[in-house]
Length: 309
Image (cartoon, rainbow, N blue to C red; front, side, top):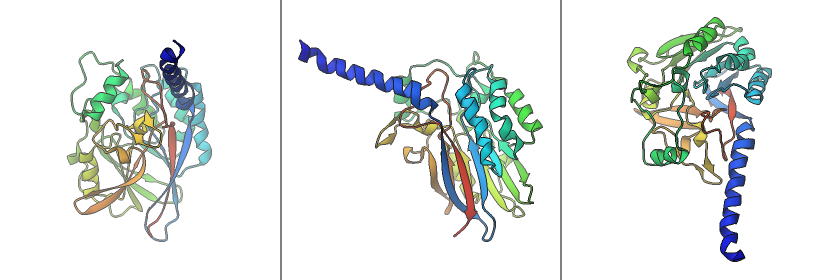
């Protein structure tokens, strides 16, 4: 009897321990990723860029709020927010409180689908099955009529009031205190087909010291367009780094058509005979209904941009 039930009970115990770890420890184990990217003109001073993404703020997430506030001590040259700030229609005040110290620095932002629409409950197993079969969430399907609308205009107005540049299907510029100018081109979220590349096509301006491309979800059609237009660096989020990963193997899904080898961190992308660097943030939050991470801790990234070799 002991042998008959021992193995199943052992597997159940290990599984329960894994869920507890993923839900109670790792999901709150915030990390800072540091990356160096050689994209600046020769002789230019390094630039430090803080990327925050996929905060998915829910009321009461005090540890996340304090951690985000603490990132201001890094003193970045500027901040890029790659979207999905919310996972709670009432989370705007705490999200803005979390980002308040960072909004003292120059910055820019794009939105993700969860800035516009609240999440829905769904079976996590279905999520994994759909993604491994090649389905990618909404991927252009309009949200259902009964979708919860988040108060994204409050976020937009607060970011704009702080001087952050909105890049949802738009171009913008940041002028740093020492006179360095950064030209930025961004898209609204491709995950729900709000991207309109024709509105920003044509490549970066030649009169800026640096040009960056910014988008929430790194769909291949967007990466191809930015790379073909000669942007040296593309910043994105959305993937959560796979969120539930297999140790020593990696991510199973990306929640878009990007391959799992590039689900997070720095990589390259090639299109039209050109190459861009791509940085995908694993983000620091989760959907409020799937508050777990495994082998993929929440993060922000400090990118140090250096002169090209």
